[in-house]
Each structure stands twice: as structure tokens, then as C-alpha cells.
Length: 295
Image 1 (tube, rainbow, N blue to C red):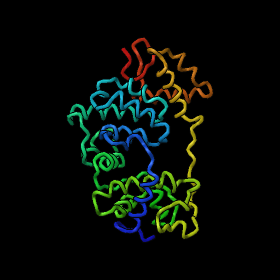
Image 2: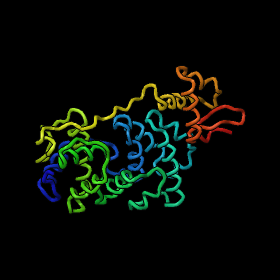
Image 3: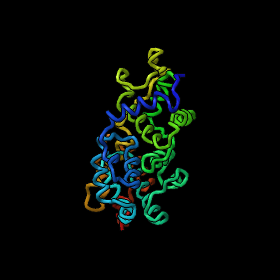
Image 4: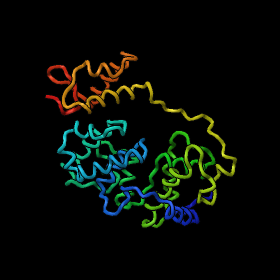
């Protein structure tokens, strides 16, 4: 394992690099509220920054506080989600806004344990909010951080998450609580910009040691699975939701049947799953619409 410890040369090098290369992301600006950071974290799950930014800016203006979103219908929130993918996140965000408005005085709690009780907030998101919105000294591990840790500390490329990831990230945190949150952001940025999954720019890395580089950049024993989208149930679900978002009201079955003619069974499965997930519903006369926009 590479000799990477807190309060070492690593902290100085990484923070100096971050000072020069930090991206100008809108949710990092002064005055951004914990609620707005929470929204960004939900949106950024499995979705690139470039796609999230314009939607997030619209949502900040439209729903600046949780109660504003809670007052909107869930269908309105799903429609505004647009092409961000995994639309169940929009439903969970609406449910989260409702709980914050009704049970937390329209504010986002700062403690990880309390954040974990909110709808749609998992371990990573709770820690990210505590760290980036409230400056808490907690380890934050996303796929970028896991990749840096796996390569630099363990000399292997990042595979599936392991239980040691969080312990490793915690061990790396500077002991100074005023520095730790920025260190976490810098480590994440390093994975996003330099220590990338494909074509990492190792010559630009500020870390003084990387066991993966020092051992010849060994490949994973098990190749990564490429997650396809074309032709999947996810694509069919998205096409159905696109029709419902574009409609001014409920639509007939014929409209939805026309979105996917390649595999009728797959279309039926996608339709059933959208109804089961609560993303859409049926009206009393048998038409279809987004959740909350029926009779």
C-alpha cells in the first residue's frame, strides 16, 4: 500500500492542485443552500455534470425551498426531470421535499444519521450533503474517490465497491476539520478530471505516490461490464415517459403502444413497471398520465 496518510504532503499537494483546477460548478457557489446542494447530489447520481447543470439551475429558481417543491404535484416534478434518467429519483426528491417541509421546518438536517431517514437519501448522499453543505468532516466516497483510492493505495483498478472504501477514505482525511471537507471535494475532483476510468492522465496527478502506476498500471482481473442502453427496458420506459411529459393531459393506449413496436412484450413490461413504480397512473376512463395528474 502506498504511504498516503492524513496531514502529509498529500494534503498540501492535492489542495494546491484543487486551487488551480477546481471546476466552476454552480452548486459550489457562495450562497447555495443545503437544499439546493441536496438537489444537485440527487441529480448527479449516474448523470454527467453537463446534463445536470441547466436542469439544476431551473429547479433552483422554480423550487428554491423544499416546501415549494412539496406544493407541486409529483407529476410536475417528474415532467421537469426531463432527460436526466432514472426518473424514480425525481419521485424520491419530491417525497424528500415533503418530509423536509412537514417535519424539519423546511430545512435540511446536517447530521448524517438524520439525513439517512429522508426518502431517497442513501449513505453517499447523506455524507456528501453533510460535507459539502455543512462542512462536516466525514468521508465521502463516490465512484471517482473509489477509483483514486483503489489505484493509489492498493495498486489495482477500481472494481466493485468494498467495505474498506469508507475506511480508506476516512484514513485519508486531514485531521483539521476545517480542511477535511475541501480535501474530500479535491479527491473527488481528481477522480473526475485526472484519474479517470479510461485514459487517466497520470502525468498530471498531484499525488506523490500511486501504487497502480508504480506496478505498471495492472488491468482488472474481471473486465468492466459495459452498461448498454439501446434496446433495454430503460429505453422503452423513457420513451413512454417522454410521451406523457409532452402531452397536455392523459393519453390513450394507442399513443403509448406506438412508441415501441420492436418487442410488444417488452413494451408491456415497461408499462407495467412504470405503473408499479408510481411514475404514471391510469384514469377512470382507461387513459394514462404522469403520477398525480389523473382524475
